[in-house]
Length: 225
Image (cartoon, rainbow, N blue to C red; front, side, top):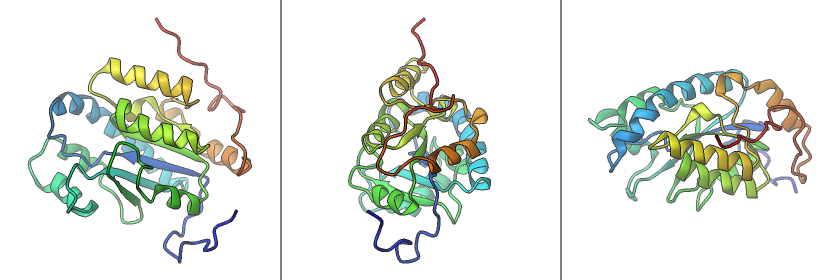
């Protein structure tokens, strides 16, 4: 059923079959094992920044799905300010991935970007069918968001170099799980063909979950060593 207000009262001008999600990248990392995560988040952030630039050039909207980190009196701007202006571990990541004025954001209270947020509504008005998921941690919030997205029949693209966890083992296991169970495409970010993703999503009927058609959605599952 089409939305009654196609542009959400003018507040969602974009229409895009593909959307890029940045999950918990505005993060102070001031928690136990935050230093471990930072080690892997630094190279990840550089890859996300490059992918974000390509996405914006290709007309793919960018959505920040960010935890409130228990700060129920904060909004996204306050969390961003905290990560940019205070001496916290996550500052270099926030500096690299700070949102642009035309980016979207949802503030989430739990692990999934969908739980008790406006993400469903936003994606509905964007008419998105394929989601590119990036961020931290691959084995927690990215995994929970991917699971909820899969149950909503979204195509999932989760570039292996654009997610991070506390250890390489945890990251690899999470990627293998999402690839096998959630049918996610884990192609490296610089190998993604954004135009092809958009064309494939545009051909997908709204009420039908697509079957793999090209290598980007038909990548063989990784095998255990």
